Image: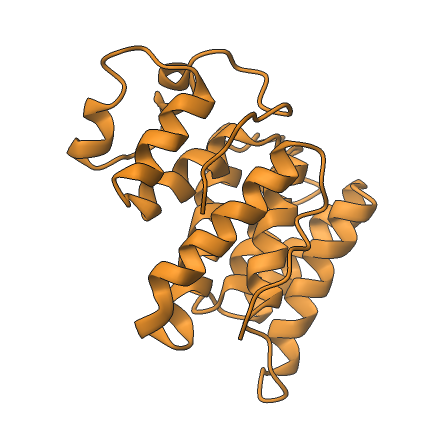
Length: 197
């Protein structure tokens, strides 16, 4: 992992503005003192191997649709023939919202996430889609908009779960790979990088 050269889809110019409503470890927070640009802050986190913080940061820095796609990619990487069908359905619902971010697809992602329980990355990817916009209340109730950072929390949850769920001994390598995917997405790519087994 060489780090990021640019993050063209990250429109906020300062890392501190991105980090104002996410939790970071103390060591990561110290890196904000110099008021770095997002790419410099990310590279510092990677240099210090603060991978969970790098995941939280990228989950918040990316636009919500791109961040949700990143959650889908990481969740897809741990799907196997043994994955329960309701988990696969949650992931399919999240991906459908990314490709076609309509209100019915957003609502369907919420229903699929709840059917899948929340011990898997797919459910969190689906919640990232649901929390991206609109209302969290039932359709016939007064609107309750989600907090702006909820999608990022769900995305970070999905990516971190995917990193440790299978083969936890390879978590660091998975974190590095997932962050490379996020960097690719942040620069207009589709994040579909090839990972050695």
